[in-house]
Image (cartoon, rainbow, N blue to C red):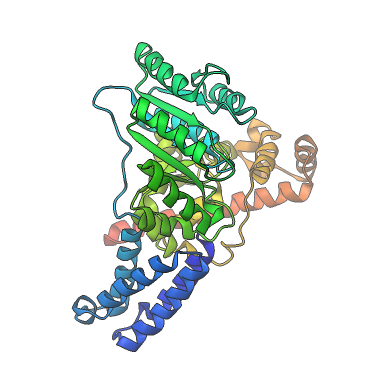
Length: 448
């Protein structure tokens, strides 16, 4: 995640103050110095850092902390609240026009991922909000921009409106809206031209499109990896065009994350969505409070639950729960579960959404790629039905056959079978703990 460095620094700073029964003014000063350094290192705008430190300091030495039973935890609560506020406070919802279609202009510089984000947003609108979007190819300057949008449209089975590259963007956008009305589309996403840098021609053209189609939203797509440049671009676009929201891309990259913390404060416009990967479903609604939780190592259970609800078959999950309780889970069940979890996104990212995951040793170095999961799938698929149901029968010769069939070394087959056996033992222990807990009215497995 983009906030890796910032998260580590803030979490170690918070840890020092967490258990304190008494917090002095000098404790707060020392902590604020650490927080200031962490934010500046993360490339957060200097004015934003000063304002944030001032607000937190005032509250942290105030009555709400000093009179609290757990002052250390109260300080952390203040930091989380101010961090949430800094990123916009509440989640900013996407506009819905009173009379369809809702028109969204996608703007930004070249290379920020604007065309791909347009496709991702259309995909999200259909999957999450059950909408019927129309993609519009209005970038007539960049070579292959129209083809790129059409390819994305095919990939997600979404219609793309185009009049080629010899017609003005204003005419393309106007005709697209007429088409959308005729075909009963409720959203129109206009992919406009970008430039390598902000220039007068670009802005004049975008203003012209804006005046003619009167969009309900103007989303600026910016690359989070460009740090302070992203903030400057957002400020400039907002000043000249009047944007209504920002989409931050490449937030999964090796970036300091300062843009996400500065953009809202500098432009006073909300971050609406964040891009967290290459795949067409790698676009998420931006929730300031959840992001603050993730940065401070408190996890993000709500996003985890939403991902599970969207990608996990409820009936199958219930069946699996029964099998887990009785330890009768098979390798077939394991394979099914693996494919459902894979749909939710990268496993290391999912684990980081769990509260306390930051304290799990080795998690930061955990690299689970799709190849490893594909290897596990290949091994299980090379087994017979009987072997999947009862792995105990898999002797040395069977292991060699499975290795040959999956194209993986015998050691990998052995490792998988050992891990599966250990997992079953752990499930048995947890189930026994739950039974004891029920008698005492205590322990309960999460989500059960």
